[in-house]
Image 1 (cartoon, rainbow, N blue to C red):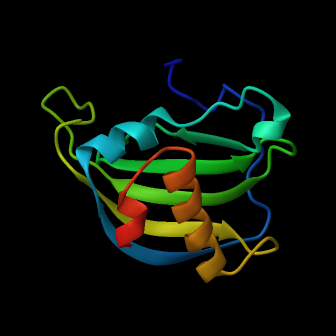
Image 2: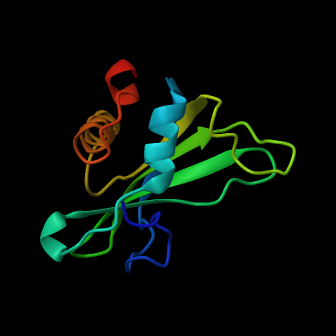
Length: 132
């Protein structure tokens, strides 16, 4: 397995017109590891670049879903994680989805949620999206 994706792993640009909505759901510790690892496309045809920001002091993490061809960020999934005594993500504790932000020119809220589910299931082999 290659290294975890980061914001510097692939070119990308922020959303231009976005909207946000609350979204609640649990993420198992195994799915959390997959989300935080992300996806670095090997070629432009791989279509998606997914990366996570580092957790802030409150345990908030943003997961970015970007198109590989254009670099456009399409969806941002905000999650809450537990931190260990050192302030790092506790990978043995489940996390929680708190909010979704999407590019309004590209899709509706319902379509953005469906897209996150499809990408998490298909590219990351995550199970949590089936239960949101």
